[in-house]
Length: 110
Length: 444
Image 1 (cartoon, each protein chain N blue to C red):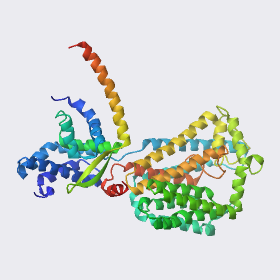
Image 2 (cartoon, rainbow over the protein chains, first blue to last red):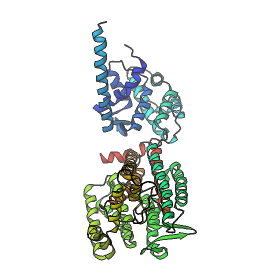
Image 3 (tube, rainbow over the protein chains, first blue to last red):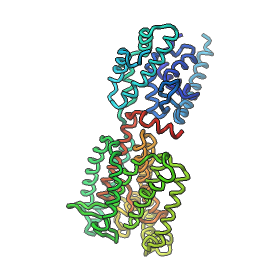
Image 4 (cartoon, each protein chain N blue to C red):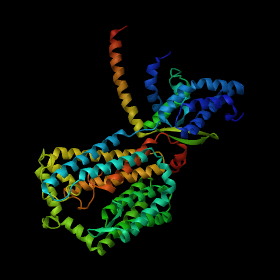
């Protein structure tokens, strides 16, 4: 299934933050993880992840650091407390939205 | 496998991304991150049987459009402006200028011979804003290289001050150059805090080095301030030093050691300085001597009470507050415009220093972190002291409300410090992570 692009755009940040909440990851690892978790629904151009990560860092939602892993230097991202707070708020919004949509289209019985 | 950078296509891709990013400093880090990603992707492709050339091709196609990525990167690494801070300061400075107009009108009515405060304050604020602009766009990190020199200059200035300065009220703290009169302790404090911020991050220091640093940075300046009799600046300096050390994650046992040493120094000074003892006693027993040493507190409290909710109006004559353009500016403001406006002014000043703390939290590298922490501490002490003082909760000194009360050296340097804060904030997203990443690791 392919998902509407606009819908994807807004949720990517939350998706990234939620994935980082589990453990610190570097870009490549993160993309593979999101792909796996979403069973291929969220498959975007890999390079577009980096502007998102850098914007999240400017917002103070993630922090980055370089670390050697398997003999290769990688830039890891770690979620901050502020980032966790942001995810919490977005999740609450999403719940509200989902229940509302469920109610409308659920009862409509299309 | 060849080196990743040996592939012209990979290099072209990274270069096309970076071409969109105007902040050159971050290019290297962006490239390294992209290379690492492409390498990982190639490795995966080759593991499933692709040739090296095919793998490069696959990895780059999977990345997507380099121009779009570059534009996104540019948006994440643009210079930033702390508008909130700037607007608050302009409001505070505007209030100050308006108050000088107010004070000029009152002094004219009182015929006390003081006049032209508005013109002078306008000149100071104008000069200050020009200097602020210079420091704002100047890369503050260049100051780091000279930080030891700044520190030494601050110490020398304090040490020679008693020899060359003009004595007023028993304190030799003013130096006249042409028609300008400069308040030495304030100049010294600016030099000293820039100097402080250049020190090695505190968490890297052992006890021996902390002791050495403390002697030069903690004791020497404080003793010089105390000897001059300018206790306010001494306290502000101590707060700035603590802020720098805490921001750079000093071990708390070392911090306790430093505080103990200062308490010792304070006790010795209290024992030997009659002047300081008198000042403290008059603060503690102000109520017993309402017309003598306690006059300041009685008069400010009365002015605040008389102000009531809405005040006595513009240029309300008050001949029992002394120095309404400096020492009693805040109570006089409340006397004129009431508790609501007074509360508003205080709220503005408090949200200003709150924002300075936030700037410090966002600073990227140790020098900027230390510098902004020191500046935040300086403003915090000045603002809270000048508010607590008028209700008798802090000893009366010549401490000024930043940007608002009258003063040449003070107003100009307030703006200079603001320029430094804006400069640090401006660069928060255009400084690469690489430089401070090793430092962060060490603390974890």
